[in-house]
Length: 335
Image (cartoon, rainbow, N blue to C red; front, side):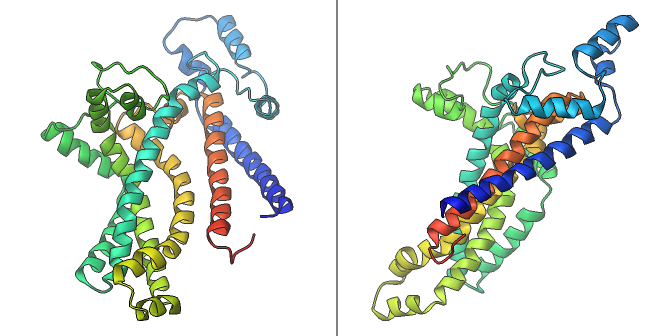
C-alpha cells in the first residue's frame, strides 16, 4: 500500500469515530432517567446538595455544551470521571478490559481451530453427509441466539451437572499475581496449573457462546473458498504431476483458500466486541461488556461514551487491518 493511500484510509476513520461519538452522546442524553436521581436513590439530600452534585458532574449544562466539552477532553485522552465509581473512566475501563480481551482471544482461537478444518473437509467431501452436516451446523450457529444458548449451557453444565462454574474468571481460592492481567497466561507463567485449570473451566462456556457465530461464518467462507481453489487449473496440474492429494490440499490449495478466511476473521473479530456485552452479562464475566450494560442502566454517561468510542475505534481499525491483510496475502489486489 502506498503512503498516500495509507494516510487517506487513516483520515477516513476520523469522521466515522466522530459520527459514532455524536450518536452515542445524544442517545444517552435523550434517554429517560436522571443519573443524579439514580445516584441519590433513597438518600435524604437537600435541594442545594443535589444542585451541587449536578454541577460537579457537569449535568447543569446543555447537552450540546457537554458534547463539545467531551470532544475536547477526549482528544487529550481525558474521558472524565465515572458517575458511579467516582474514579477516572480510563482507570475503570483499564481494570475491566483484560477480561474482555482474554475472552475474545479464546473465542477467536476456538472459532479458527474448528471452522478451518470443518470448512476444508466440507469442501473436500462435497455433497456428502459431512458437507451437509457442516452446512446445517453453520446455519444453526449463525441463527442461534447467544443469550438463549448461554442460559441453556448454564442450566445444563452448572445447575444440573455441576461440572462448570456459573460466573467469574477464577475461583476465590486462587490468587494469581497479575503479570499480563490475562489469567490463563499469568497462571501458566507462574506455574499455577491448578489456577489455569480453574480459569479454563470458567472461560470455556462464554468462549463457546461468543465464538460459535464466528466459527459458523468462517466454516462457510472456508468451504466456498476451498471449492473455488480446487477448481483452478494449477490444482489439476499439480495432481497430474502425481502429487498426493494431501500434499496438493495442504501445500497448494489451503494457503490460497485461507486468504478470504483470514480477512473475514479480522472483520469478525470486531463483531466479538458487540457479542461480549450479551455473553458477559449472561455469564457474569467481569469484563468491559458487562460494565457497559451496567453503566447504561445507571446512566453513567462518561463511561458508556468512552467504552463505545473504544469499541468503534477497535472495529474500524480491524476493518483497516483486514484490508491490509487482503492486499498482502493476495498481491493481485491493490488498494
